[in-house]
Image (cartoon, rainbow, N blue to C red; front, side, top):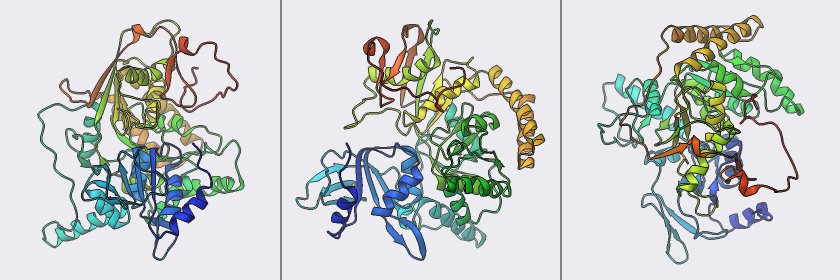
Length: 503
């Protein structure tokens, strides 16, 4: 539902003298999350002393908050809270009790909703003006005290230690564990996995550049950082042309790889630079690695990951989707993509209605198995759609043969890039060497048989005998073709970063 005269409404509420909170059923699913965060805070945040055109603070309450938007709000020093918002409406005066975990009506004292913070550390993030300043300041303090022979400071809230488990690890938990130098990472554990591959695209690239400048980054610590020019290549505005002329040098002088306008979509290129069983991130919600795992992020966190070489992560729970059986005639990969939400709907784990939205995948890692022989390009079509599930990340368990074929082809492409003058040549050469090293010993991680999942969904391919369609305009609203047949089609759009060229 479209809000009438939103700016006038905001001004009227501000005149009452209270800070504003942004409240919604499902919040932050659009793009770009950094732009959205800036827009919300511009109207509802606080000025930062001596820093123009930037704000922090603010409150966001949502029944479901998309993971990237949640993280970007954390980075901006806002307080994002997932809670039931059905008793709140525009103009209400509410009181948020962060330590008690409740929201009350200012007029009556009635408890409107109760909540649990994603982590107690989020309170420190708000006080520090954002997650990134907190991480840098806390780390600097810890190192300084260590040098002085002092115990760690008790000023900071520390992530709570999780109960030890004797169960095994999922594939995602092992991959993140490897990036942290341990066997695996349990859900709820705070960690800072090493970033092997980081991607940035051109609509958010200028914001990433600004954040890198704030971090005084002169060279990337992440092993490979790639900048694409895909979103604005077709119809560039004057500001886009300026970006296309200035951003490549900025990236390359810091050791990154800059593509050229017209080269193509960020995902098609970034995927071909990946190493198996590694962790990365990117400034696009569809940065969903088909090999390894990625945790897409807003521009600020992408800049942090590129500059520092690690990424803050509260390890999400995992949902396992296990395919079995054989694909039936006439069924395509797109039907497998839609089979995931369809199966969840059938089990009551996913609802289409926004009010009181139920989504078993939201904020969790979607782990997929049972399709070992997919080509990596095909696997990306499935992992890519985890963005539409609002999942925090995705893994697909592939066999070694398609990955070896893919890596071999990618080495050839990277060598071609060097011959064509793409830079930074040293970074590309380093990635070629890492790929050749993996091919010499092509071992893939596997989940433990006794790994624990928040939910397990089994999908029998033998039972999918007709196409499954996502009805406009909600990718969760999946129905069999027979339910929507004879529906008049008024408009068709062809082209998406969610389908592979085989279609």
